[in-house]
Amino acid sequence: SAYGTVPTGEQPHHVAATPDGAEFWVTLYKENRLQVFDPKTLQEKASVDVGGSNDDITFDPAGKRAYVSLGAANAVAVVDVASKKLLKTVKVGTVPHGLKVTPDGKLLVVTNTADNTVSVLNLEPEASVKATIKTGADPFEVTISEDGKTAYVSNFLGDSISVVDISAGKTVSTMKAGRQPAMLTLEDSGSGQKLLAVANTGSAELWILDPATRKLVTRIPVGQGAHGVVRTPSGKLYVTNSTDNTVSVIDATQNKAVGTIPVANNPNGLAFLPNGR
Image (spheres, rainbow, N blue to C red):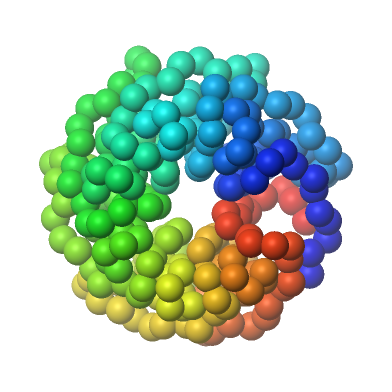
């Protein structure tokens, strides 16, 4: 069940935990700032001005930098996590949304929803665009393989997942998804095999895909408007159902929904706090 409700700024969009779990950061679609919260007290610790409407957020593995998509500005904000200060903004494609850092902390992959591309940014010595790669229609979110070689991009209007070879700088294949795939994450099937879990907004399903074979493993019914998905070390997946105002709880070992949690209106992003409750 939900154990707390946190007042935020206008139109909170995404949430992400710092790698150490000491804070969670919230993007605000209707404001020019982010908010930083203490997960124990649920109180706001800081406000970070990023200069514009902000969509999604991710951290580098070391927890030193936050990267924030500024969809209306066609840019990504680079924020110093310790000082809570904006360091710079980097122009990318048109209407960027999803973004993830490679596990080695060296590259950032950003989806450009209106360009049907992803931008790949070098992060060292400082963030700059290295490559632009074509995807499917309306690339929305991205997740990256543990070895940092492959990006999986959900094409919201293409009903598909683009498989991107990051070093080669090209899309190498496409997997069929449900209708309007949104957030996606890699999860362990229990046998060491990595599977891809995709929340499909238009078909109210969580699809489990095998990236090795590019095939569908199973489709799990969830709520209407399925949007966000996150995995936890306990072997569970959580899915936000934006139309139903619920979160579905999935047992990944059984590939079935085992519970539904009522939440507030129009849930979107979600994050796992490693030191949370």
